[in-house]
Amino acid sequence: MKLKLATALAILAATPAIALASPSCTAEPKSKWMPQDAMKAKIDTLGYKVKTFQITGNCYEIYGKDKSGNRAEVYFNPVSGDIVQKGD
Image (tube, rainbow, N blue to C red; front, side, top):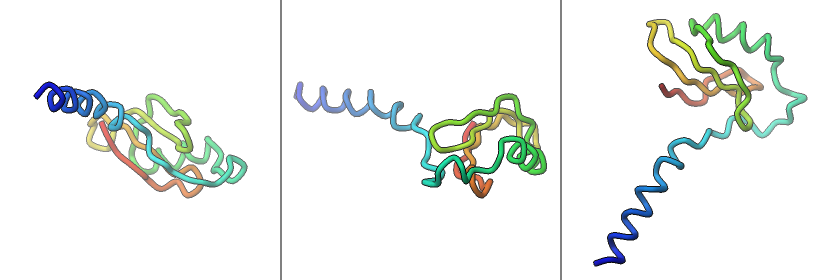
């Protein structure tokens, strides 16, 4: 019984760490990435209002608001500019 409880607690403790891991956006070297200014312009055309723009792992990541004014956390492929993952 104690082993089952310990196992369940270990799984629950690891779950937030798994959920917070950033996605894999590209395997391309940074020399092939879209310049940050060009990426910011593309993000603007998608309707996002950027509060924070950063590089996370091999992604461009933003925190801000979407077209509807909802909070947005979005990961982008830095080569193509495509959205890889959305969160809030």
